[in-house]
Length: 309
Image 1 (cartoon, rainbow, N blue to C red):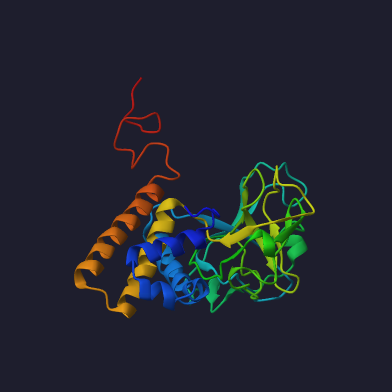
Image 2: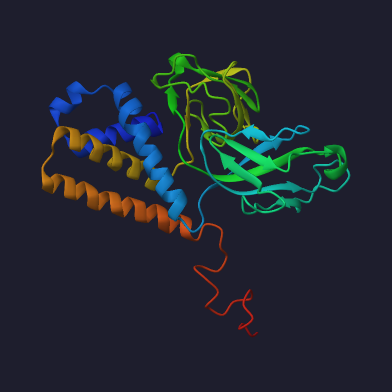
C-alpha cells in the first residue's frame, strides 16, 4: 500500500513496478494513468467480478416515486438491479424491523400487466406508472434499489493541501481541484461508492448514499463516528475495495499499457498469470461472503434436514 493509503496511488505504484521501464515512467504522468488507464481497468475488473461472483458486493439506492412519472434516472454505476423493495418502518406505522413489505418483481416486457419495471438506458422505468401512491403505498413513496456496481464512476484523490471538508457527520464537501482523477459531475455519480478519510489519527470510510454535483456534496449512509465535523481532510472516492481488487486493477492496467509499449510475450504472459490469480482471489473472497455453512448444504449442519443431534 502506498504511504498515502490511497487506492489510486497504490495502483499507480504497482503499475510502474510491474512494467519497470524508465521511458514509461518519464512519458506517462499519474494523472494520465488515472484518466486513461486505471478508470477503464477499474470498470473491466468490477464488471467481471459483479457478473461472475456467487455473492457480489451489493449496494443500495433510495428511489422516490412521483405520481404518474414513468422513468427515473439511476446512478451511472448501476450494473444489474437485483431487487426493488420497501421495508417495515418506512411508512411510519410499523415497527422498523427491516422486513420486506413490498417487492416489485419484473415481468416479461409483453406481459399483459406490463413489465412492472425495466432498465432503459440510464433510467429504470415502471409500467404501469406509479399511481394513487398515498393509497397503495401507505403514504410511503420511497423504494430501495439493490444493485451491483459496474465501476462506472470517476475516482479521485485529494491530499491535505487540496482537502475536502466534513461539514456534518453525514455530509462531505469534495475538493474542486483533486490531486488525482476528476470530479464526476453526473447526478448521483458517487452513490454507492466509498468515501475514505486518509488523514487524522483514525482513517474511516463510509458508503455514499447520494451526491449533488451542483454543490459537490456527498451524503453518507451512516455517520462517521470518530472523524471530527467542520474539519478538512485528505480523502479519496473509489469503489468498494480489497487488496485483491487493488492488485487486479493494477495488473489489468499494466497489461493495457504493456500492449501500448509492446512488452515481450514472456512479460505479458507473466502479467496474465498474475491477473488470473488476482481475479480468482477476489472470486474466492466473494464466493462465501454471505453464507454461514461454506459452499453449500451438502455437509451435516443445523440448517440441513440431514443433520441429527
